[in-house]
Image 1: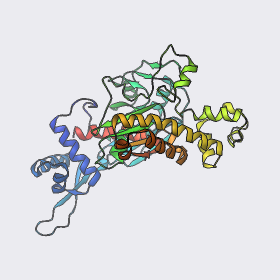
Image 2: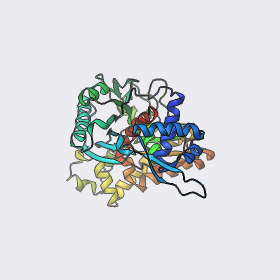
Image 3: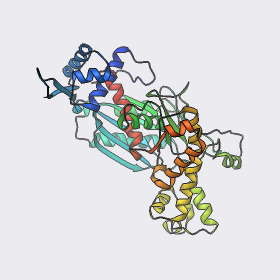
Image 4: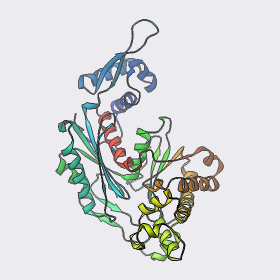
Length: 405
């Protein structure tokens, strides 16, 4: 099985749409009869039977047990053959690099996690390639059946996955990587690769792998720096892939002014300023277990310590998370009013703060959104945590495989 072309933003043909519709139903509902596939996809039974017959010949789908029948001939059930292909996904998160290898039912066969350096650079991309190579080398599955690699990475990616620009927070200069991420992976691994923005990957992953199929419009908040937008079940990328960047900036703005507008229109740090605010409060004399966790050296304070302190019921850390939730909640309220989504997923790592952050977000959105939008929207933490980006790009590759079946 070979991916001829990464579809991504290309309009699907009628055949590709039918492939995707039928195979998604089989993946989510199998073992399932052809009659039930026809009902769920609203395609006629002859079309479904022809397509399923083709999948069986290719080994993508297998026939299983007979279904129970109320009378007459029992219908034969079909299901995906998960071992017909495998996919590698690599995701760059706030504090980690994650690689997964999955089968076509998105069962995780192997997983590797590494801590990441805090800076964005070409070095990070090479580390991601190394991680993909490592998980492929260690796997016991047939390596010739690895059909694609998905790469989820923050920033504005050009339409071919050739270059990336990382928007920096709080007045810092943006970083551009001019080498081709896609080519770097494909030359090293010799496997077709798709590159996707982290929030875009995560929003599709949450929808395709976790949420109810009836959810069509949703937003994935990737920490405080960006969001993935799903409109009518399709990722909205904008005219040239820059949609979803959360906040405005100017090269001429001072850092002090950037701090001032961060909670309004501006950009802010990945952790919504929690580390900075905690450090400022401790320096003013407020007690906190955080000081002990970093042995008095506040320069070593990271988001990881804040999460740990919240779990230990540290009052200062809880207050910091609640304030971050209120600040992020106002930006989410703006998005809820603008887009009227059914679901907003909180991810990218900040959801690890738990109830102090999430409850503050929910209360703030309820307070600042118009009533019709606020009563409609559900605000939930990411179902996949730090695996969301890696699994999201896996889902994108799987959709490509299914569409070209």
